[in-house]
Image 1: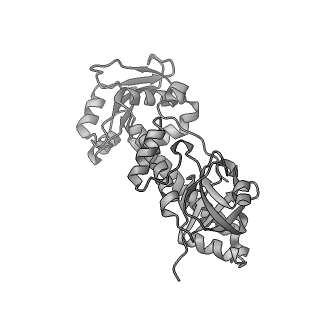
Image 2 (image 1 turned 90 degrees about the vertical axis):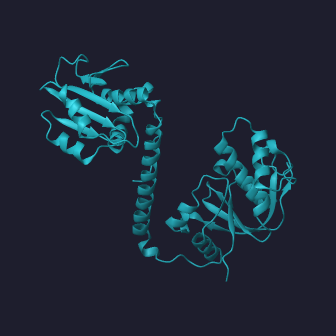
Length: 334
């Protein structure tokens, strides 16, 4: 038996229009500025219409919006399954689409693009597996559900009880932990992308800001020949008090620093100096060997190391330095 196609259509943020969807037997989406979309047939036509109606939108926002509008007006079919969510009641309303796309602001003024629905029942979020909850957590207004989630929701709607309830807490803890690791991994890579896009002066400022967050005062060398130092960090800011940390910053993504660059950096150091060599392009094996046998303490910091240190000290960094890489704290169940 072929899998049923099931769509999620959000009733706006916080389920604002959930009761309207339920009472009026519809699902609806916004983008009021486009007006009636009946004349739009291709994805390209939707993209052009969104760009014209919302000139302030960035290119990626236009593409995402156009994709969702195209799906709602053209890809969703009569007979497809659909659900929407009530976050206050923690229930999903499930039904079947029974009309083509139509435009009617009299239903919901802010969401005039509509589909009629026959609602058939509700499914409690508390009965769903963690994997299905996760698949329903996307922020998009409209999206397709994976087959596994569809099967589970249809079974619950038919009155079948979820299995393995006795070990659900343990399963949930493992599943939530797995999802968190996936999110953390993706976030880490996105932050690395942001750091990589900084120019050289911004990279210097970021490294100096991180050292300041660690309790040091810093001096950044002016542009031009720096004799092997871009930043000097010390307790007094002048390098008179120990520890005196001399920092070299090489912002060349994809270009590793070799042993010769490390030797050149070490050649200008005093015996009481500490060294920090930052290279967003990483280091060769010989460079790391050179650092290990250096006559002064020397730490090599590649892009991964830099981002890890940035995250560790971010909250203590000054606002000007945080603006270089704006980050938002996300709370997660412990």
